[in-house]
Structures are given as structure tokens and as C-alpha cells.
Image (cartoon, rainbow, N blue to C red; front, side, top):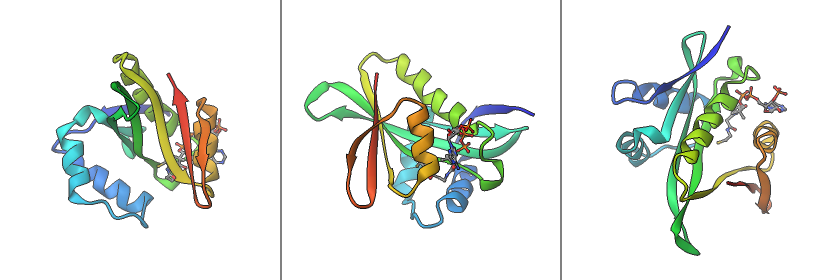
Length: 146
Ligand SMILES: CC(C)(COP(=O)(O)OP(=O)(O)OC[C@H]1O[C@@H](n2cnc3c(N)ncnc32)[C@H](O)[C@@H]1OP(=O)(O)O)[C@@H](O)C(=O)NCCC(=O)NCCS
């Protein structure tokens, strides 16, 4: 039994759409989201369990407002199909992002915004050394300084 990763391509982007619709049924992903994914294919990655595509991650790089020479990564989506959770797929997908960040010394932080109630995701990010940066009634922002 093994976890592996694969690149997003114009041919398999529909797979990401299917995954997102199952994993995030409440979210509406605009076409522009997928257009951005296609334009920067390396900012997404698919996760496989025993060669079956069961998850994916997508992020963007953006300037840090206070210091425009520096960049930060915003994880937009990270999801794994329910039947394949707790098998390490999301951890591998996060590692993909960490490895990409190491390639660019301008990237100084990674952050993600999730719902306060999303305990599994909060545990996952904390396990990967993210810290709570901001909280409001619903949402929480977790950040990892590089
Ligand atoms: C959050 C999510 C991506 C985790 O995916 P996953 O592949 O199951 O995560 P992993 O197997 O890599 O888990 C790694 C660690 O995260 C923590 N974790 C993950 N799911 C957990 C849960 N349900 N309860 C408690 N801790 C959890 C644990 O520390 C776990 O390590 P362990 O299994 O050795 O205890 C998955 O639950 C999911 O897709 N949720 C819905 C989408 C979502 O909320 N995404 C959030 C970011 S946009």
C-alpha cells in the first residue's frame, strides 16, 4: 500500500474538479480558479493511494504586502476523499509544497485559512509546524514561517 504524487496536467484537471466537488461540496470554485491552476501547473499536485487519485492540493504564491521583495504561499485547497483519510496522503501533498518552497528563497511563509470547526485540518497543519496567526468567530489562519 503506498502513497504517491503526480503532476496536474491539462488532461487531468477534470480529476481535480471532481475531487473538489466531492471534498468541498459547499464551495463554489469559479472557472478562474481552474484557469489559474492551468497557468501554474506546479502550484498544484494530485495525491494517489495505490495508484488511485484520491486527493489534491493547490496553492498560489503572492507578494508579502509589507515587503514586496518577498513572497508567501497561500494554500487554497487541500483535500482527500473521505475513504482514504488518515493514510498520509495530505501529509505527502504538504511535503510537495514545502519542497517547492525550498527552491525559492524569496518565499518566507506559508499560510492557510480554514474553519475553526475543522479539527482534522487544524491538527494536520499544527503537526506540520503551522501556528495560529489569527482567529475570528468562524475562521482561523495558520502560518508557517520558513
Ligand atoms: C484535512 C485532510 C486534508 C487530512 O487529510 P489526510 O490525508 O487524512 O491527512 P494525513 O493522513 O496526512 O494526516 C496527518 C495528520 O493530520 C492529523 N489528522 C488528520 N486527520 C485527522 C482527524 N480526523 N482527526 C485528528 N487528527 C487528524 C493527524 O495528526 C494525522 O497524523 P496521524 O494519522 O499520524 O495521527 C482531510 O481530512 C480532508 O480532506 N478534509 C476535508 C477538506 C479540508 O478540510 N481541507 C482543509 C484545508 S483546505
